Image (tube, rainbow, N blue to C red):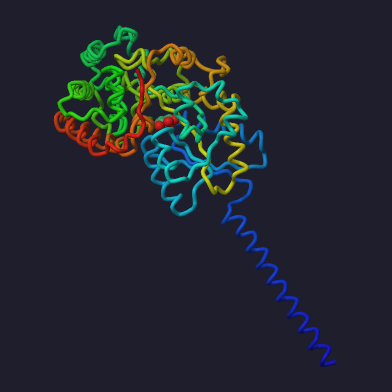
Length: 441
Ligand code: GAL
């Protein structure tokens, strides 16, 4: 009787021990699946699309992904701060900690180069091939997405950077014809007219990088040869007349801008103040178009745009892409995402909301607004394309970051001589980083 009791107690203890061990093993399994490799049905995407129009465009694309794969979860993680400047710091930290996301928003060429150089990227030739992208992506974009003859990025859009957006009601009331603003003199005359009519700050601008954004378009306005020299690291003399003239134009431009610019990013005062009618002009890429639309405005009726004076025959390129990193947690979902990004349906869902044009030439034009229809035509008819420095492609990463800092200072002190010296000294000091030879002419 006593032995029987002892046996059953042993049996009970053994049972409990096995139970605990099984629970621990299952728990560890679940833990490793969930946390070390990530939940199997997840896709983690980092981006900096924070304005209402940008956020909507991304949701549209994510929505399409969810329609195709209802059991998968997309987790977009927003890192605001400049056009991706903050995001890249975060990505670097994540990669070092071996916690890289599945993919992230990235501009091609120089911005992608550090990841390529470190051996972190895998080619995406297969995605290009299965979507026949070489047939539909313009040559200029193709070459920007390649390293050593292989594709490393899938482009989702083509943005134009050299545009000035305006509030149509204000220009109409002041009898300013936007299509006549093709020279800096004509543009500044229009600003003077608005000032005389009581608008102290006809131009709206935001924090540092938006000053750099204006500056690069001003550089382009001094001729494609100058821009080509600039992106090839050949503007190395502080006395270069074209550089000095560009800074003088920016200085004059800044005499018309809102003094509270430093507190804001591009959307939340500059573009939104053109929408609200507090300001007349905002020099910005055509992602602004997405926000005018999101605010319920109609192109050519409530707002409009024209090329930055002197750049009518140029298309300043800013391209968003996604890539395939090595050792990511959810390769299957990434594959699905890249296929969607590459597809006509994906691009025709995202771009009509984003304000940009599709990176594909076979877009369904009926889905695009009036501005976009004209941009599609401009893209094929302009004489020159130039890669944006501020938006990652035109010049080495270090120069881009330096430019944003220098321009922040310039917006404060407007010292032409010192700024020309600082920029050219810096260019000279990083000559070995200029590894791309742009031929823009
Ligand atoms: C650019 C990006 C665009 C837009 C813009 C402002 O660098 O390529 O898609 O988001 O920044 O956020």
